[in-house]
Length: 162
Length: 162
DNA sequence: ACAATTTAATTAACGTGTTAACAGTATAAC
DNA sequence: GTTATACTGTTAACACGTTAATTAAATTGT
Image (cartoon, chains in turn yellow, cyan, green, brown):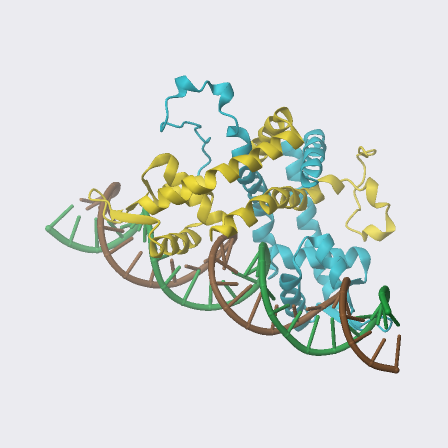
């Protein structure tokens, strides 16, 4: 991997075609967003087919999984933990309610808020998929190794605080 | 809007005593997909506002940037380099053509193929945005450091080959 | 108490992600 | 040369991402 050579590259607003691409200062940084995308896709491509067999998208599954862990959450908590924006979450929850996998109860202390929880079929769906999911986790760990995973996670967390 | 908070890895559905922490096997791996998402969002949240000022989405911009680097590409090459699926790319190119930023020419050797290139206004748009973009790259590097960026990139590339 | 502000969730509008199916063209098999 | 197969880009249908505006309820300031 090429390291940066000279700190005096000031006029690189010019076309990159006139400059050897590998020595441009921000070559690595420029590749980061897509590298993150590709890495994520490598993982998701393993989960998606197995979720699709049970008619779940990865986002729907994230909500199911969180409700299984915490039993009741309001929309704001779900949005934060699942990293899903409120408008998307509204649609996802409407979908899951229609399928009787999730129910909502209006909070009595703050009537703007709704508390969501899994129904019995929702819990059942979670238990049914969990083994497949764990199998994929094991494959990832076998390929990549737990130390690298933790190293990568640390870097990602630090970058996320930018 | 969403504040950052460490995911508290706590499962209270079973007694942890029967399963020591070292045997909670996939805690880290489980967090990877969202960690990748959060890291990417930290970056994109810097680029999006500045692109929006020029009426570009990040995907549209990726296409513009690639056409600036390679001058002519067909749809398959664009899809691969920009990591955008063909149906999305079709819509993006239609949008950019409507705005006279990109033109297409049917390949004479293979008439299924279309070669895309920037128009003069397209090149102008690229040059206009580039300085802002480079400023963000520098901020990222100042925060994170080039060594960590390259370390992270290496890990991401390796994970992407899973 | 009451108006102004803030907050939780939703709706609207548009662009993209994802899968499946399709039309037109090129290549391979025969 | 005709048929079968594979490939390129597109369309269709649905779900999610993103921003702005909206509704209803809580909180603050006075």
